[in-house]
Image (cartoon, rainbow, N blue to C red; front, side):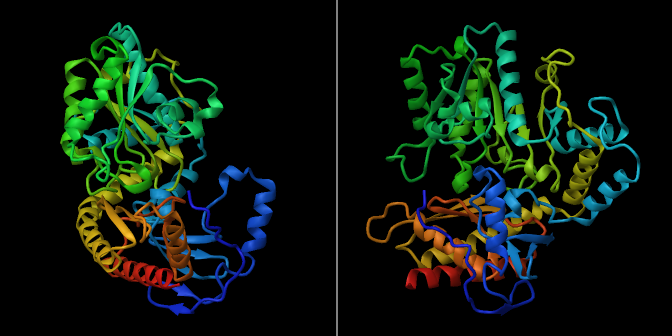
Length: 458
């Protein structure tokens, strides 16, 4: 992780005023440092670590701070604002819902929920037949863990094993962190679930001339040496659709091999689509890049257009495994979030945002590749699909991952009116709202190029 400290103290920067950006004060804006320090005094530090910018408002693909400075947003908060910040149709749907005196009704039926789930299933298409709605992404991955293991019980498996991919990320609650392989972040659990297993991720830079199928077979071979029988001991495969920190997609044949193993051994195939869903990668869902058919998908983030909405979508025989009352959520499917979710689907369809994501994504990747060509000693990879991209930095002398330069570039972008995702690693991630214009997208990539140039010349 980067050791470079991004200061909250205001720094004099070049004034900027374009159609899409406006920087008229020091950055961070005066007053930012005090506000952040106040927050640090009263809020768990686990919530901190973002770039020092106090959001005042956000509209479409722009963010404004407390001083009125204006940024092109390449973050969508964290891949949430797929249909744009403060989308008017989403706003109208929420306001209409608020005008009716019904905010929450637990799991009692309401017409907004019924209409939304019907539309969501139509959007998802076959083979998906039922939905379980929740509030947070980690709830959804926890629910999928439960469903996979209940399926294993139904099939009378000897063990309720789940195979996950090393360094994938599935959330911050207990089951989600056990399915993630980050030992330092899950050490608080105090034990290791011996029925959660990991196989290597097929990184393009670490394959040693092996293809995805070979890496997959090697991973399964290592599990077999531990005495695992796929038919008897495994009930689910859990995949993050792409590895989040660097928008690293799998080779297609790697995932195709997983699907084949699942079908031959009564194993459920589950995709964690938190970042990938609802048009982000140029398809409705990211798993479609691999030409496979999952049994379950976990969804959230862009699903609600900014309100807390997540869910699991799957086949009826799996979704109905829990008995009545065995799996529910206090705020699940309340009218407000269902109305917002429905408006998101309308916007995706009416504005053709999924095809737009694919079209702009190609332009985006081409521009990022051009930047890579300008700095071949410092940029190692451009990764991603659609409107989720990542730029990976390397040390010019050693070729090792360069976290510090990535952090400095993220900071410099902020000073120039472009907000990017600062991962703290050697990567910078980009995920603009799908509603961004080509003009603003290109202005953003030009700004990124300026930022990299200035950082490298220092």
